[in-house]
Length: 121
Image (cartoon, rainbow, N blue to C red; front, side, top):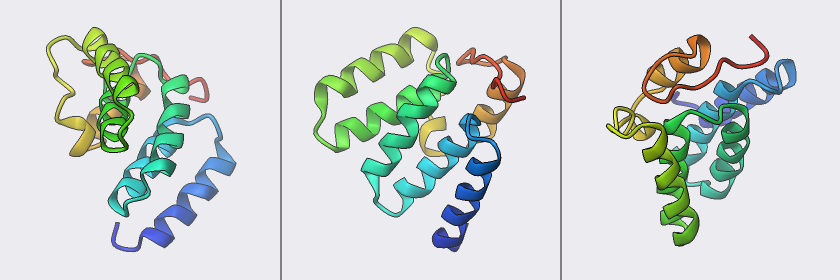
């Protein structure tokens, strides 16, 4: 999205409507990353990890952020979980490219990360 401020406002509204939706937090984290707000991205992804605990893309993105923030032990743990959830690494490129696979995994419960459907759907 071109206007990150507008995007963040939209995500705030979406979160008010559905506070347990992992897609809202995952996508907002991606916006935070795009503007360099890595700590805010980590906060959203840590919540997403609780809401979609079997989604490897969340752990891969967390591992990248932890590493960037110098949190090596956390990065190693997140990477290890991502590898356990998706040993073939089918979601490896997902963390920095597209939300499409995450969307389909969370909404259907299928795919490389094997996420469970969102409780709110």
